[in-house]
Amino acid sequence: MVPSILGLWTMANLVTFIVYAVLWELLLIGVPIAIAGVIGWRWWKRIPREEWRGYRFSGRKRTSGGGGASLLFFVAFCIKVFVDGKWNVPIATFTLDYVVGSIITILVLGLIIVGIPATIGLTWWISREPKKP
Image (cartoon, rainbow, N blue to C red; front, top):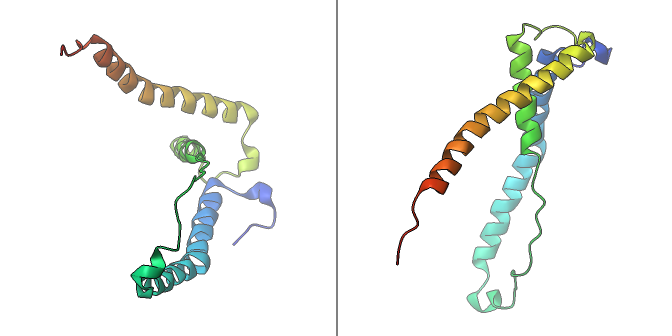
């Protein structure tokens, strides 16, 4: 499944490897966690109401979001490579000029796609009259 020399990987190899890794992770980790969740939920429903009051689940929850932009950037890069006809070309043959040019193209297109609706929305929001009480 993995080429002997990583320099010979193509975008097709990379995307296929990522898809297989996600599917195996779902099979080996997701299914057991889902089964454990169902067992835990059924156990929780059997606890008497009086005992529920002893448990406290409130408190401060910390989340660290992020990572969505890098996924979208990777998908955009895959689309750019496919459109350029380099889908089955080894990644090691990509020149620095091609990669930097692709990154700049993706950033500019992303700014256009996000910037135009944001400008329209901001213009509409600024131009509307405030409601009088």
